[in-house]
Each structure stands twice: as structure tokens, then as C-alpha cells.
Length: 174
Image (cartoon, rainbow, N blue to C red):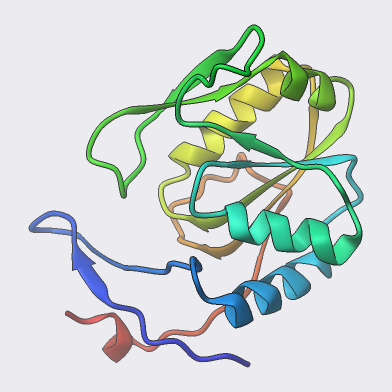
């Protein structure tokens, strides 16, 4: 397996998180994509939120020989036809954000088996926002996949797959 030393960042007086960023780590991205692919259900299209999980979903698509995936954007883009959005309060972002998809992305999800991909799921807020985008687009969520997740994920996400990564308590102390 691969080993990485993660910096610990203080979010509040009561909460610190390990910063797991795959940007720029090609070896880790490729390995995580390869191992997640082994665990995911059959699907027609994958979707993720902008931006940190884009390298992961891209590498998963590349390894599977898939030429299309969807990125829910953090802002309305000029090319989007009939966009709609869902608000999200992410633990790593200090302000509320909105994730958007346009008509083209909606049509890719409509009546399709959709796999949601993320790099890290902490509170599940981003996951819930993407789930709402998929449902509103008429897609059928068949699974959720992430590299890391915490115990705060509710039991509502029954079709959840992640990699198992080990950390000792000493790694998590500031």
C-alpha cells in the first residue's frame, strides 16, 4: 500500500481534520481509482462535485475506458443551459456554496444508473447535495464511492463504498 503523512488542520477550537488532498499526487490518485473500481456497482454515469475529487473521477473513467462523467459545478457557467442548483455547507468551506448542473448533465442522468464519487466524505453534506441533484435530474443512485469517510455518515447512504485506510491515533494528533 501507499503511505502519506497528512497535515492536521484546525477548523474550530473543538475540531481538527487531516488534510487529504489528491491534487498533484498521481500515484495516489491512480491507486485509489484502481481500488475503488473494484468495489463499485454497475452504473451508466458517474458524478462528482467540483473540485477536489475531479482527478479521482477522471482517473476512474480513464481506467474503465469511459469517456464521460459529470462534474457538479460551484457556479453557473455560460455554457450551461437551464441550470439548477442545490446549496451545500461543506466542513472545509467557510461559506455556503451551491452546486449546479445544466440541462446537458441532467439529460445524462435522467433514467440512468448514477454512481456518486467523492474524495473525502466527512459530514455527508456534499454527498446529500449531489444526491439531490441526481434525484432532481431523474437519475437512479446505484452507489456512492469515496477514498475516505468518517463515522458521521448516516445510514441513509446504504450503497456506500470506500477504501479502507488505516490511521493510528498518533497520526491524528496535532
